[in-house]
Image (cartoon, rainbow, N blue to C red; front, side):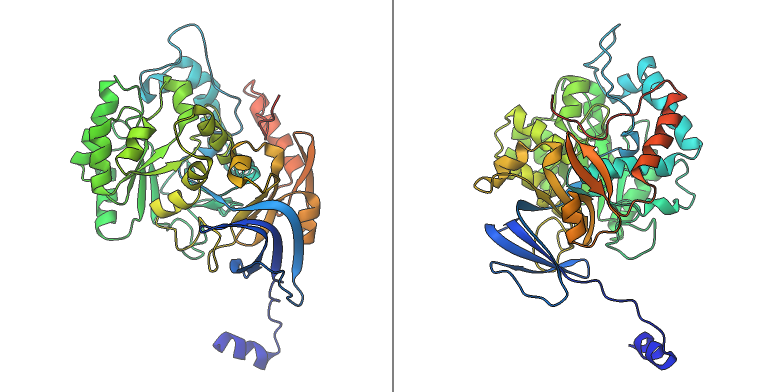
Length: 450
């Protein structure tokens, strides 16, 4: 009020409020699928969901026959590796399946193909380009929040570009103000060699003090007969890190006893089946985890051995036929990770008051969940974060007032990006040169069906 009064007294121009956005389509709400419904976005949040088309003066209107889903929440990714081609060495041995994560991380072929060039890129100023490419790939698959950015120096201020296109849950999500690096969510690469006691103590103290909502910890990432992987769970418990603010990533080596302990403690599991199958030939016994009552989120791990984004991982998980319905897989990528990250009052579903984080998908409205699990990259026609239309069909972006969309061809269909820190054309050119210095070709931005 004081700022408004001062502006009026001084004759200063106040920033114009953004026009409301009205989006028509089949709205996927937590309670029902609303055919031919309407969703209203005001000041970056969902202000109404209605059956009848609202009449709002000055609103920008997008009328479609598409499916309107809440944006996906990716709780397990290493996005800065998305520029690399797939990693799948077959010979000479040792090759996949490896016994655990430490085996392939020490493999000379991995070091040459991924680790060494990635580190060189990171230490020579490529962070912002790597981040932008990864976030674009995420948006193309309906992801609006992502976790897992790497920094060369965790103690240095994060680069300004970390205020990304998708919400970066570990550094700058926008859910907790405009400060960077103060998010109550953390991810931990591993237990044995990757986490020291001091780091474990810091996580424990943060949880006890109510300053840490979620710690996502890689644990038991190895085959079911691998003793080292199973021992990680014991170590995690000994450090006091198994509780309602803990999510274990992978958990491939765990069984009914460990899943029951996790459920009793209120911990969650993040499931990354494609990467697990490619690296270890096994994935977590997800049926046992569900039977134990565990909270389960689905996430792609990273592009080199997992899926490029959440849309791809949902399709892969559906193909494994682990007994989950298409709707349940959808919820593992949206409402479930929101609850696990204690963000369910902010995002994860389409409801009044939630952030306008959503995407539109071209598909059969008679069975929207089946359409989702069988979707192709080109079926996403809009992705919006906090009410900002960032990716989609050019006509959809234009209807919602997106600034200067830049065209891109996705699996034979024209799509466009808006609001990029660096143009897509320039980004691809710069990354191509940087990767070529290592004899590596830039990975495609979309995994198109053959």
